[in-house]
Image: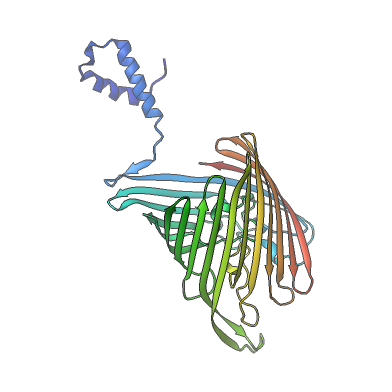
Length: 387
């Protein structure tokens, strides 16, 4: 017979004695008690509390990364690629748990619909955390949702989140829009697999005004097509003097714009293609490796970028990916970044339902105005336990 916790059996026996079940045999009563205990032990429901019947879901993962850089030390992420200048040499080892993540979601039924909240943190909050800094909490998301509205901090609407290729490296692929911004966003489903979004968001660069972003997606299981556009303005000042005798001139507001086109397609069994192209003026601050929205003359910098990735699932446990990213900047001073390229090749093995092992090879190239060209290689392994 299944072993029963005394804390569960005792209340059940007392209740059983008050019912007209005295006519039941001992075997019947024991069977009923066992069924009740099994129900209690197997409950898998979110935490609920309060008169509003709010439910809370806790989610996240613990991730440990072990990294070898060959030729230059990039650190905990590959963000150091933008500073590559040929002055470093040698091999470097780093380990980090900074990507570890913890989040809370809640839902509350109201007369206006289901009210949702989200708060999420990771541990890239320390100074230098993207190079070799240690782990400190950092807010990633904090938002409220209701009937298609989202208010708070979340992924920018400009970002092609559904077509974002997966890398073990936290920094990700060169050539993809990436930001988490404070916003007021509205999402509407038009039917026929068409979804639209519009948002006012805090500018990710230097501006006193918000940006306006709109997106339209055709979203089905075998194919996703999405377009997003961004407009706004930004402001800067330049030094027309020298370092010793500066003369700071305000260049005024400049109109910025950006367009992103993205897709995800199921090619054959287990195979998925992700791709995107981005172009715009003054949008470097919205791309994953950041950059200057203005050049030294105070003019907006035009940026183009793209990526393409192929994912292949093999069996129930293996996933393989190959991803290429590219970014081109149209103006800059000698020594500034002109082109970035990245290659990620990774494999992940699902050891258990919640545990994954991974290994990734990264090759990055930085070309600069004036003819400089530098590259670096990296091998990264990781273990991730999700909950």
